[in-house]
Amino acid sequence: MTLELFPLEHSDEPEAIGPGSFVLRGFALPYVDEILPAVAALERCSGFRNMITPGGFTMSVAMTNCGQFGWTTDRRGYRYTQIDPDTGQPWPLMPIAFMRLAQAAASAAGFADFVADACLLNRYLPGSRLSLHQDKNERDFAAPIVSVSLGMPAVFLFGGLDRTDKPARIPLMHGDVVVWGGVDRLRYHGVMPLKEKPHSLLGSQRLNLTFRKAD
Ligand code: MD3
Ligand code: FE
Image (cartoon, rainbow, N blue to C red; front, side):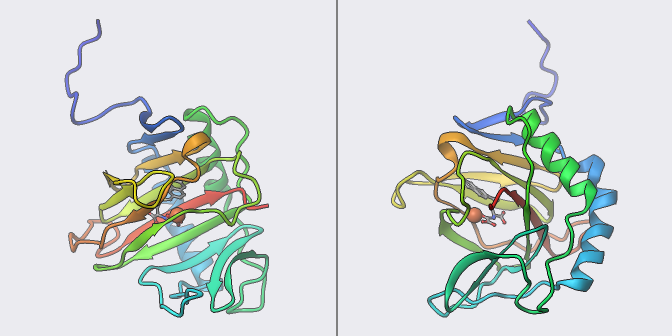
């Protein structure tokens, strides 16, 4: 039997939170020094903005995208576009470091050959939240979604396939990566309002990068 010196502190193994979902604690840490300047560069082309839902509400999470496709919402609905509606230009190219991180994380969770064609970047400020929803604007639910958490910690809500299923609460910290696939791909999920606990590197914000195969 192996000695578990710090059983609650750390694990190098993917931690299953569902039959097809795995938390990789700290997996993105070696990539942070490449990711942050890349985010700063791409947001100079396509800046973070608070989008409007089809119901007319302004989202508290600010979003932008990179890659061939970007997720947007306005009064006309939720969809993926190749053009940033704010600039009239294509979304910024997906940085190579983003591609490598997404592919390595998917592979570590057992999803081989994941090639993301879309990366949605979510910026949370204290109080920002994401209410329970499903991600179903992608064409093919066979591919997983890879999400990277940076900056302030958040409590992720992991529900079921029915909106009324009671969600599990999963704390996500700076550097954590979650891979969501298989039978979990259409589970309801959300993020609790962000608490003010400034992060040493990112200050009073949380950044989440979600890699998808949209097309
Ligand atoms: C679970 N973002 O952008 S991680 C989203 O932290 C979104 O910003 C959250 O939900 C965030 O749509 C949560 C991403 C995530 C994405 C897809 C999922 C979690 C998922 C699909 C099924 C289950
Ligand atoms: Fe989502």
